[in-house]
Length: 103
Image 1 (cartoon, helix red, strand yellow):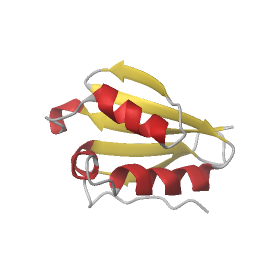
Image 2: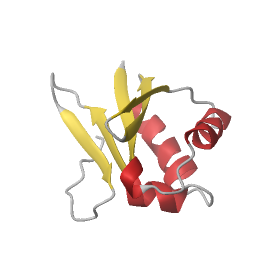
Image 3: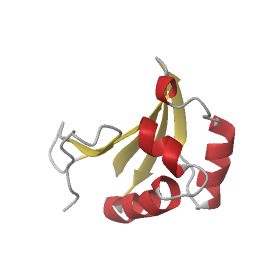
Image 4: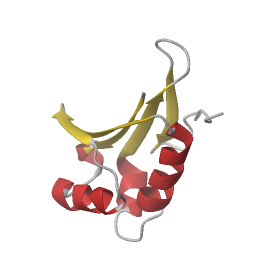
């Protein structure tokens, strides 16, 4: 089981509404654990199918008409890699950050 964390930095997301976003995520058939700490809201998803989950979240969240622009400007997405302690950076609001690919 792998964890993918979709983290929203609140200081970068003025219009952020956790409850509305969570409702939308649930409409995608996903039910993450939600943690709020240090100005970051993390939606933590657990799956055996990490590539499929990431494809669904890109389409359903980052490309979404209602939430996409805000999430693109304020989110970092990380996932557990195949090796112990390996973290993959799948998305970062800073386009200059080097992103990992799921293989």
